[in-house]
Length: 160
Image 1 (cartoon, rainbow, N blue to C red):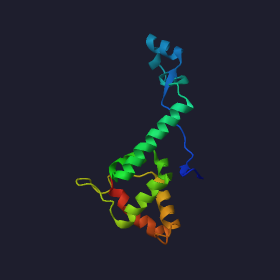
Image 2 (spheres, rainbow, N blue to C red):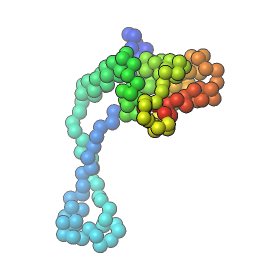
Image 3 (cartoon, one colour):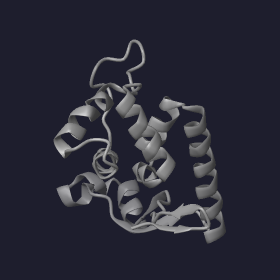
Image 4 (cartoon, helix red, strand yellow):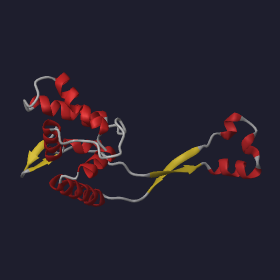
């Protein structure tokens, strides 16, 4: 569900924040005393919380703008490797219209090829990316059926 406003497309996303587990202080004490290896239950780590770095909405907005700038630059430059890397890290970027359009165009004209030295099937793609491309190819009328779209997307299996 996207919404267009002022020439930009708003896409719902989620923010993933790196977190570090906070260990139960008694577990650390037991381990230091050497009591941690006596039973199977004592070998498990007791976590009492998570520690994250402080962040704000403004920080998240700056990060998303930086990611979108980098993605726009890669799409404009036709940098297939950078686009593939970004889609592996953040598959939800397939919902950005110019990325979906560019990848669809490359699929249709056959310009997606594996770089030299890369074995066939060396790359896996997120199901979200594949399903979105199939739906876009069919809904735009470029390909008649989902089966044909999936067969055309077979090139993604060997693309880095």
